Length: 116
Length: 116
Image 1 (cartoon, rainbow over the protein chains, first blue to last red):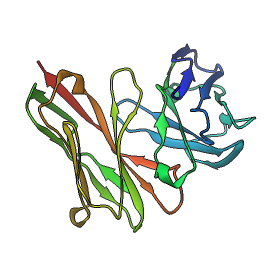
Image 2: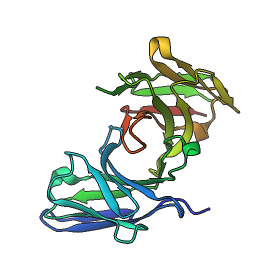
Image 3: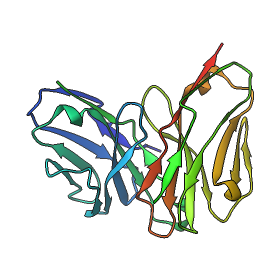
Image 4: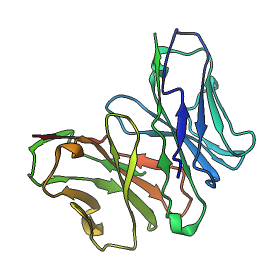
């Protein structure tokens, strides 16, 4: 069983550049989530998809951030005009809709972003 | 408002000692889920356990056990006979059961160091 995979695992970029992260969820999971984690903190919710529909965005997600899930499978998270404050680990997660899942989400290994 | 507090920032124990990680939560919901995740140095958040608000039975899984007490809003995690491989950051999380799976509120994590 393949877990949630994210690419790239590490990205160093100069301030002002755009970056894009990709997430492939567990197959058959129709829900996909993006979280952000900074050093010494727990993950914070960014956004959530059910199939291809983006159902909620956190206020943390400024207009420089955009997430898509065009065919209800993989998702991309793009950050435009990166700032040093964007340096963090971006975690993708997925879950299945069944009652038996009990709200459990499964995370990938994350994509580390360093903005210099 | 929902909140998860993990007051222990870092704990060091010697191998084979027992250790308890504390988690206190706040919510006004009557239906909610509680989780523990392990984050090893690789970064991936590994799901350990889920508890719903109606199930206060304690659970044991091998060397791991969890004590859920609604009266004190606590969901503590005990590792018996700790091993070096248990070294990681452990996160407690809360989600609303009524509204769906997407918003987990994480604590700030407890870094556990198990020394050989």
